[in-house]
Amino acid sequence: MVVVSPDGKTLTKRSIEIGRILDSGYVAEQSSDRFGAIVVLSGLRENEKVAVEDTFFLDAERRLQEGRVMGLEVMP
Image 1 (cartoon, rainbow, N blue to C red):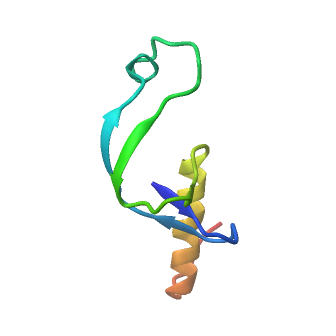
Image 2 (tube, rainbow, N blue to C red; image 1 turned 45 degrees about the vertical axis):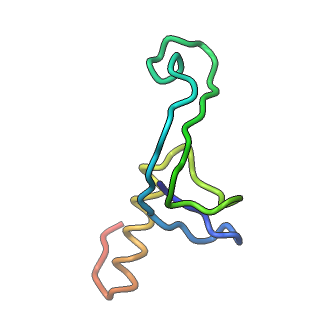
C-alpha cells in the first residue's frame, strides 16, 4: 500500500492486513462497475489517504528519492 502524507508531498510504502472482500464480483472481474471494497484490518489509520492508481510509478519515484537521500547515484 502506498500512503500519501497529509500535505500530499510524501509517499510511504506500508504493509497492511486485509480482511473480507465486500464485492466478489468486482474482484473476479465479473462486474462492469469500478467500485469494490476490501476491509483493512491493520496498517492504516482512519482518514489516511492512499494511492489507488499509477502506484508502480509512484513507488519507482519513492525509490529514486530514497536513493538520493542515501547518497547513491541515481540514473534518471
